[in-house]
Image (cartoon, rainbow, N blue to C red; front, side, top):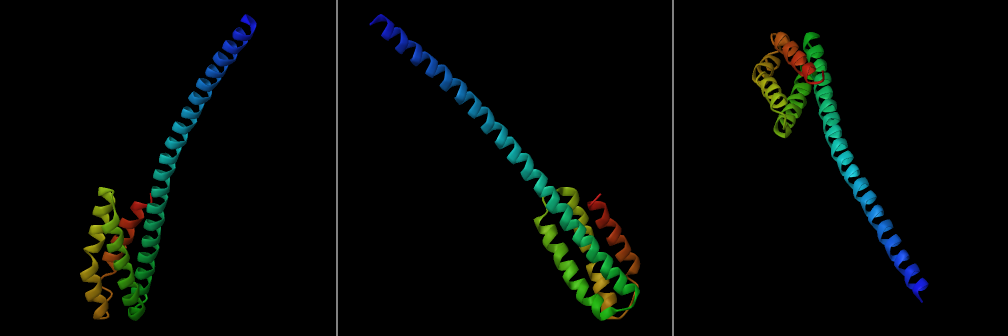
Length: 139
């Protein structure tokens, strides 16, 4: 009978130690997963921001080329889409530097729109400035 109680106590103690070890390992793995998830979320946000900045930069480049080639009809269409996309990006921006850069880009909208409406390429220097400003967001 004493052997039976000793075996039962040994089983209970062994099970408790095993449970505690298992629980500790599970907690550690869970914490590591949560940290990794958080880090991946931040990396994904950065990748989306860079992709968006890259797309805006490419669109600004396309607009600049069309204005330089005096394709004002195409340039007007691109300009509308481009500045609408910049406005959406600016509204969604959480990074203060990015928000300011996009706000500055939006400041060129009136001049570019006016120049395109009159068939003028006077906005080329401003569009170059916009292009270079957006390039800085992806570096």
